[in-house]
Length: 233
Image 1 (tube, one colour):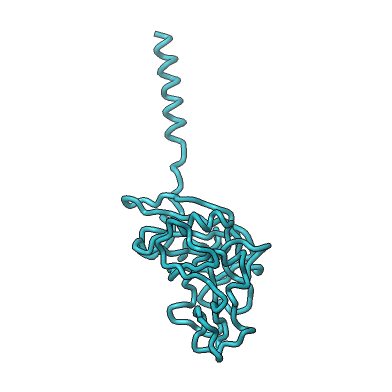
Image 2: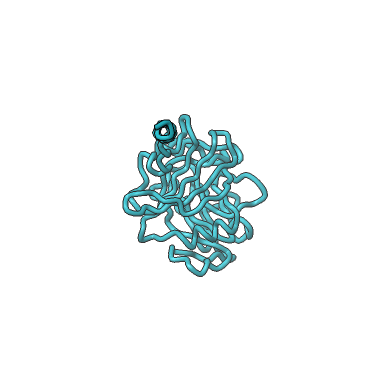
């Protein structure tokens, strides 16, 4: 009889500890206001607005549940992050918000498994950041006369960062002049970026091998909490 009471007490204690265990937190995409409507999502999350480092994670939506595909340390703008809708060009801040991923590009050939549209960089390839130019925030080949070289990026001049990259659709569909241009997810350079998100080269290759335009991929950029919280987007 005593043995039965002891066993019963142990089972009750174990049941109580299991019941008291908190439920697992929902995956980050499940806490976002919007994920873009597709089944692939990249999250770029920084600890705070002034942070220059954080985490990039890529996710797949499977049977209604977001499943992590991979994760890597990331770098942000040298001046941290800023609200995308009010960001100013030349501030060295990474714009927060939810964006599509129009195409990929690179000085190197695309990874073998890449299905996302991919453009090869050569000596004629520029990204126009001149807000006076008709081609503001666009890839141009060659650089047009109204896009000043001092206000454009000669892509081939960045063999490390632009070995492989994804265009982030910030200020891209309907560019607002002065808000910013040339925001990419690219390979790490020596330190913080001028406003892009960067990751190690091996992670960039994995992302390009994973991303699929048929699954309408997006990227959400923000902070863990506060006014720029990633969950707002």
